[in-house]
Image (cartoon, rainbow, N blue to C red; front, side):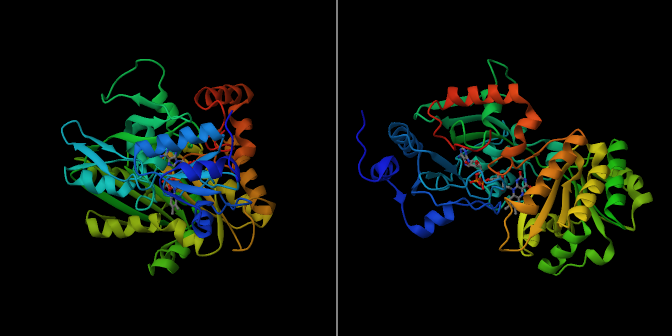
Length: 456
Ligand SMILES: Cc1cc2nc3c(=O)[nH]c(=O)nc-3n(C[C@H](O)[C@H](O)[C@H](O)COP(=O)(O)OP(=O)(O)OC[C@H]3O[C@@H](n4cnc5c(N)ncnc54)[C@H](O)[C@@H]3O)c2cc1C
């Protein structure tokens, strides 16, 4: 039997690990992510891992002393997944931030979990390659966090989400054993797909310590379209028309009028005077200009004005409007970021349904969306001192979920369940599925010490 020193298991773990902090300010910072969710307390301490051995050591001790561990990358999550409270120890892997190798022939990169998403792209770019999953948070989020949330982004319209770009992983299990999943080949079906299982598991099954990523050839050319509409309904109809025209944009983003005004206020741009809703589309590859023409023809009946460019600098300015949408809204108040997915042809109904919820409840809802894959981010904005986990904001989240379900959709397209969406998970996946998921969790983590209360 293990005898615990005064202060309990967490204190024992923190006393034994190499690089730790119990500084109150650092603990307060490590208690939250970017979701606006504020847990009741702060973690007992933080272990900073600089190597796989550090992670193994921390998890062995966590098993020995039964300490709940919260894996943390860059802390930019939007579902409370890396939030931590009293009795927890945060395992911060952000210092494991090296790109270990890039193989331009196989088009692969091997990276540590703390490498930022944008750094992978910068390194790949030197070989004429790119890493496709590009969350709007690319400059500030880590690959480990991207894997744990199965992050998506703008280019996912054409190239798929994180799961489509991760070939292999190394993860440390709760008891300190190292599991390797997947393989370095493009194809492979030996055994169950534990690689896919770890991706999107929100730090509940293992701590990712290395990832082999699939890179792709950088398109030689891109063509960008910015289209402005009288209202959100017209823009949503235009997005559906693009899909119906069978063109495949690499980017197809929707921004509503309120969000455009917030972006203008933050960036000094002038989008909102050109319309009450905005679609940003980008085609790429050898046929970029041809596809652009088909796309423009499809949306012309719905648009007030359309700007077309193949100038990279102008395209970057237009893309920045979307990348800055969430930070711009966060200047207006505390933001609860919804993340529903609907079948793509039902985008216009989803946008109309959100407007109806806002009008009926009086809750302010702004909408941005990855229109090509039907993934909407309805953003509830409340006062800086108001709660997003109870009262009207919580009720609005529930209503959005039921809207998505009515339209044949899902509770979360890319941000994960975290703590914020626990209440509706069973309704979506069903009792049997959830029971099996808890059995899988128990097989990986029998003591339930890895990110308890998150994900499932
Ligand atoms: C402005 C802004 C824009 C955003 N845009 C997008 C977007 O377009 N698309 C999108 O998908 N997301 C977006 N996000 C959300 C967020 O950036 C992603 O969820 C990202 O993948 C989180 O990465 P992170 O390193 O910050 O993870 P963290 O917040 O640190 O952790 C997220 C989850 O992953 C787990 N985790 C972290 N590292 C590991 C690891 N090494 N092993 C196991 N588990 C781990 C944590 O326990 C937690 O459950 C946005 C966030 C912001 C603030």
